[in-house]
Amino acid sequence: MNKAELIDALASKAKMQKLEAKKLLDAYIQVVTEQMSKNEEIALIGFGTLTPRAQTERLARNPKTGTPVMIPPRTTVKFKPGKYLLEAMNKKKKG
Image 1 (tube, rainbow, N blue to C red):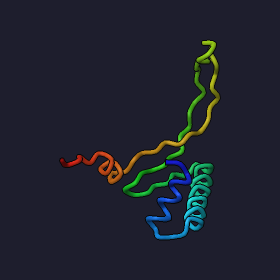
Image 2: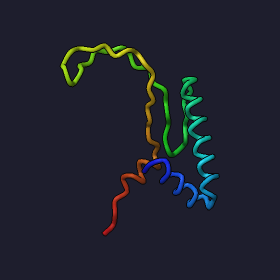
Image 3: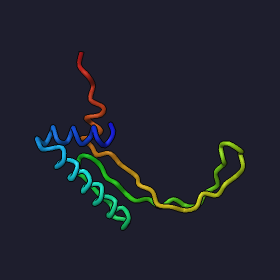
């Protein structure tokens, strides 16, 4: 699903105009980005938790040439799915 499809789905589920759904999604993305840049965790109970995670400097290899390359330290995001999301994803289909 891409952003446009997500906007369509949000508008349909929330019974709102697509423009309103786009504004809502853009605002959500902006808030998450701001909080992650401040190293703040975002917990959506039942859905999951977004946690900033520091990665240390590490050695890797260039896949084309095979030469070693140092990857500088950086911050990334870890997503831990919540109970209800996992249950919905692993629900056995009857039939």
